[in-house]
Length: 372
Image (cartoon, rainbow, N blue to C red; front, side, top):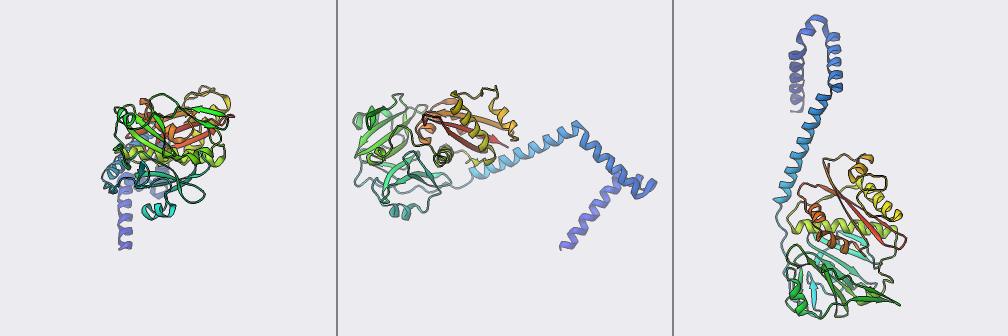
């Protein structure tokens, strides 16, 4: 069967060549045909309009591929939601997990994490999800007990009726007043009062409730960190390191995809070739003390991508600086309409994140979205 297919292809090629070059063959034989084919190839390779046509065809093919991939993503069956129960010993639970639970029990329920990455507390976030659905991040202490949790999906249960989708007024009416700061040694770090989140001290845990300002101030995410874990972080920011830099990068990538999953968008792939561009811009801002999409050399995000040899049909950039973690950076970006639009744009296919630390340990975050 393979030989027959090969012979058929040879016959088709021969007939095609004879159709275009039959007259030349009769006049000057094989050498004449070879010379004319060579001249035609050179004409095609040097003709700008031919190049434009080929590029246009290639772009249309890539767009078609993207649409097919989007359709496949949209047609994927939704992951089954877990049966959630009320917490047994804490005010809140996430995915039926509470602070103090054993790691072995969590992983018996959720399986192995999709990723482990260092966070600002000096421990790892273990990230569990199924194609970014049922997304939860869990941190464990040195004894293998749950000491931190985060989710931005409908996995929250409570003893007071609060859940994702509750509005801020309901939160404030049920819980005590939020804390206005956290003491670290002899320094008192005030929490921001910008309406994007409230932090409460409940069950000896710092519970941060994030609100979606563009959807009626409803609860969009929650982070729960034990007071013991919080006390192990000496300052407002984590201790800078290459491991923390990489941890923040992958955490912001995962958080972006988890938000896209909530809003029914295609999951983005990690654009490793673009990571250098994103990191370099964060480093430039951190070292030179500015915060802008345009660098000190007057280059835009698109200039930087092109300078690094990145080919793209569509690109966008999000920036954040000064947030203590990728969680706070992401939630802030979601409350900024322009940044939110990039995070949820249908047509993007890939994302790379670059992080750098200033001398005062303040992190700078750059997200580069592209469609190749």
